[in-house]
Structures are given as structure tokens and as C-alpha cells.
Image (cartoon, rainbow, N blue to C red; front, side, top):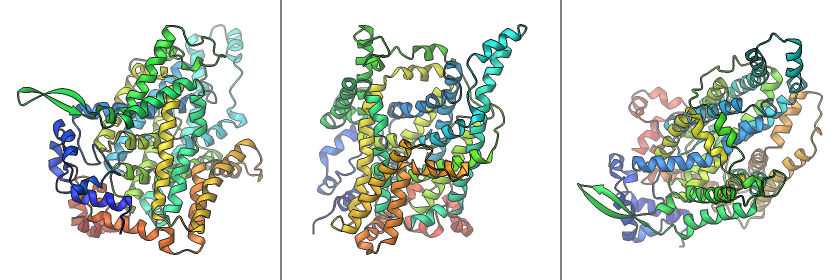
Length: 608
């Protein structure tokens, strides 16, 4: 009988269990020996050769050397940078700080600081996958809808000038306070909406409602959800790449060169060990392919800017590839800025804002569930059990509450582009993402360092998006290996859910104001949900898969559940999702087995 790719992966992992430090508890502390990492692939057993689907340099529980953790963590920081920094820049105009670089730099520092806190929280006690938490575009749509209300329209730019004429005795500081109050009052409204709507995630996670729904979610619901995460971002990737397609293509080529063509090339390096210098081979290109590709494209843009090859007028094609466009952001950023809760004042509440933001929370929750499965697959971990998903969603709700208290103007969610980076760099270590969280906190305090990366040209970021978002879409498709693709039923569900996830949001964006129920809050909820690609695809996939008659084998439910059950027998078992240092307490008191966000007593025993 011919084995599937997934079965081969399982066989490879079982064969590796006794040798791979990633699965041997304390012995994983010895993993940082660089010579071991490189030399082991040359002595693979036949069973290990079957494990080409995973092919990880560092898996979930591995502990890379500290210097590699910093470099790999910095790579994830760079990948998330474009998406996170885009949020305060998008909100700048509706918040009335389009020309206020000081306010924008404060928002940027705050959102990076909070993203670092939430990443540490999620990787330590949340779902415990190598997943980065950052600002979410799911909250952008309701935020823009809230700020578009008449009472939040920006004042006339000439108003401060007229005020200075009538109030000649007013000091400059008073005028500055007035201008700050204009955008802070708007931000406090968004803070209140996020704060209250995020309670939904706490209820869904801690009550176990997410886990109950997951019993009815199969590959035909997960596949279009993850697939549309990547496909729905093609416009954003196209906009950034379109600034200069040559630079974007160069960045793509460099990433492909390092991650694929040179992935087997080991670079000679020198290390001091046992009181003598040693030369060893290391897969440098595979580990830092995204970082090298980005830096290569950035360097070319810098040289073209220095030699004045790129156009200097903003109306000409190729101007966005210059590296000196955002230099004023560097000069205006403070050296040190420590964000704190309530820095903009007490959040304000209104029913319409809270209800509108709830749609963004639900869409973000759906997206995160799909991200958890994608991240587990790319990091060499088994599919997340119910308790881990419940806990992950609850911790994400806590992260959104933290973001609301600190005042980022946004919530927090799992970052898809960083999940895609796991598949490209072959590094799925949880410790690397925890290092990224520490870096984000540290660099969020030192504003000028983060501001330097604002100078990365859009075409370079667009080139990275082309590779990353394509990887996400492919990961979604890979979940279809469990279902019968010869079944017309499955093809109909897959095709309709995916196509609807592209058509409906596009139509709603092209026809604003078409929904008019007479209740503004309800209109807002409907528009937000039906303009979220992942929600549409996942919703139709979920409903059709559970209502159209079909056998469990045809739907892929049997293979999907067997995969989860068999993972308990794998060398890397479900214990990687347990909360650290707490297993003894959970086993001692049987009452903990009734809490849906904690590992049950029975599953804990099985994992032993």
C-alpha cells in the first residue's frame, strides 16, 4: 500500500523520536551544538528520509543558540514590521494625525510594545505555538466605519489658525494640547469599542464554546479559510509591488534563491569551542532567506537612491522605491518612549462602536483558528487540541484588552506572514518567537531604531508579501489531502466557498452603502462580516460540509480525527501544548479536568 505524504511524515517522526533532541526534554538544551545540526542530515536512516515534508532545522521544542535566536527573532520582527506599521499609518488620516509625525511615532512605538507583550503571553501560556501576535486588519474596517461617523469628522485644518487670531494670548503649548485632544478623543472611542468587544473572545475561549464548534469543523472548512487568508491579500501585495515591479521581482528572486536554490548549501563558519577554534558548516541561507532577500532589495534601493537613479518626483513611476521618503519619521521619533496604560486618557464607550467592532473580533477569531492549524503544520507540531485552541482564543482576547488599555488603536491577532516564514526558513522553534516578543518590546521603547525600518521601500515589502501570502494560500490547500477530491460534493463545497470568499467582499467594497436596514449598528456588522474573505469562505465551507450528505471518509473527517488521535503516539506528542510548570497541579486536583481551556486529566495521562 502506498503511503500518503502525511503518513510518511508520521513514520519519520516516530523513527526520529529516540534521536532527535527536539523531543527529548532536557537533552534539548544541548541542541545548540552547531556541528550536530549540520552533520546529522548526512547520516539519515531510511525512515528519516521519509520525513521530507517537515525538514525542519529547529522544531517546536528545540532551543537554538542565543545568538541564532536573536537573528531569527529579528527576521520575524522584520517580516511583521510592514503589516504592523501599516495599521497606524492607515489610521493616521481618520485620526486627524496625517501630518503629526510625533503622534504617529508614539502610536508605532505603542503597537510594537503591545505586540511583543501579547506574543510572549501567547507563546508561553496561550496556544504555545511559534506564533506572533500583532495588529489585525480585521479591526481596520470597523474602525474606519466608526471614525467615518459625522461626530468624528476631522476639523478644518484652518481652525487652529483662526483660533490663534482670536486668542492672541494663548500659548503654543495650549494649542498643541487642543490639537492632541482632537486625535486622542477619537482614539479613546476606538479603545472603548475594542475593550468591550474583546470580552467575546474571553467568553468563547474560557467557556469552551470554540472547542464545541471545532467538533464540526473539518478540512473543507479549514482549507478555504486559510487559503483565503493568503488570496485576500493579493491587492495589498500588488499595491506595494506595483510601486516598482523590478525591485519587487528582485526581492522575490533573492528570497527564492536563498530559500530554495541555496537551501542545501552550507556556509563555512568558525566557532570557538573546547578552547580551540573549529570550522563547521551551517545552513545560513535556509535560516535567513527572508532576511537576506529583504536586505538585498533594500540595499539595491539605497544605492539607486544615492546615485539618483530613481525619480525624485512623487508622481513618477518608481518613486516609492526610494529609501529617503520617510527620513523625517526617523528624525521626529523620540529616542525613548515607554508606553503605559491609559496614556491617551480613559476609554469611552458607545453601543454603535462596540457592536461594529464585534464583527472584527469574530472575523479575527475565525482567522486565528485557521492560523493555529497552519502554524502547527509548518512547525512540525501535531494539530492543536481543543483545550489549546480554547486557551489561545482566550489569551488573544486578553491581548486585545491589553491593546485597548495601552491605546494602540487596534487589537491583536496571529500574524499569517510570520507563519508562512516558518515554512520558508524551516525554523519552528517556540523560543525564537519568544525572542521576537522581547525584541519588539525592547525596540518599541527605543523609537528611533524602529523608525529606521520605515525607510524600507514598499516594493521590497511587496516582494516579500508575494512569497509569504502565496505560501499561506498553499498551506490552506494542503489540508485537502484528507478529503476525497474525486467527490463532486467536496469539489462543489470547496469551489463555492473559496469563490464566494472572493466575490462577496469585492462586491460589497464596490457598492458601499447598499445595506440599509434602518439600524446603523446592524448595517455595520453586516458590512464588516461580508467584507471579510476568511469569514465568508469558512462560513460557507462549515455550513455546506455539515448539511450536504456525505460519509465521514468522503469528508475527510476520519483521516482528520485519526491524525489528531495518532499524534498522541508520535515522538512529538500533544504535551507540547501543556502549560509549563503546572502539570503537577492539574493532575493533583481532578476538578481541573472540567475546565475546557486546560489539558484534561485523562489526556495528560495519555501523553505520559
